[in-house]
Image (tube, rainbow, N blue to C red; front, side, top):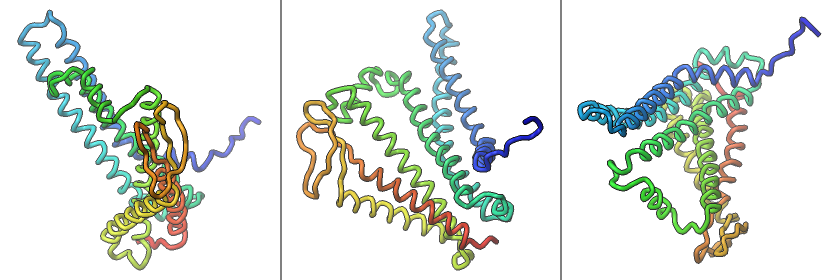
Length: 295
């Protein structure tokens, strides 16, 4: 029917607002990094042209070196800026005077918390991936001058550090495994931060909320590691590439270890982190809803 609009999904609106609020500042670092990498690419391209003068080639070399240093600096700062927003926005929007407005919104505490975890967890993961990409991109063009070997030799050396990979399939599988573990760890990192900030704002700890949040963060992180270690002791589920290059799944006993040329990937720690993330999410949400005392 015309003239009647469907109600917008409240959770999607929360995601949109959190993303736009964070992107106003964080996106500036991404834009700066793109400009620097583009300038680096121009310097490398023009510097490889034999028709340019020696004086101009020297200026291009200077520009290339400056852009390398600034690109690494900006991509590194991006991680800390993102971390700052993970903490600052969560505190400001929920536990400062602005929190009165946030908690009067027609959404649940699960939705408030879930939006923060998705948006800022995504920013954290992206910032580290961008930093890694920046380093690899720059190394691809500077391996010969900075490290003293061509990029093919460098790639072979890096593969050698990873161990004996008989097939491309193993490299891909191991890369996917590392990405998933990376995701689980950083999701846990954000979840623990939000849990620590939330608990530090209950009435008993509110007067020393900053100190309490730091202590709670480290204690919770240690508990996470201890539980994941114990779960691995109980059931150590692994994916293994056997000597014949086939992928198999199994459970290692308490005194069993991988032998030969088998490449094993422990899956239990990743599952442990994800399970603990879910548990911590609902605990944090409950405390937000029932126990938090706003200043």
